[in-house]
Length: 112
View (cartoon, rainbow, N blue to C red):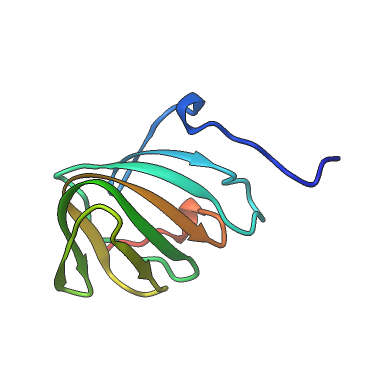
């Protein structure tokens, strides 16, 4: 077994998520972290996680992050660390890399 893995996000089928659409690499249960490329939708929903920390890296476009009710403007190369319990959503037309730690787990998504 190799001590590395490679994923090409261009080859991963997109799936719907609360923020828009995402392509997820290394999201197997028990993984230390995963990497997602996310196309933010104007219909992004406020949600939170009880276990996951997420790190967003804004790649393209502009908008704002809603973080526990506070609106924070973002632009390319802005990074945002979202800790467990923070109600959040991205608002605007932009693309991000999302790094969830531990790896993304759909059962750790909550909506008020």
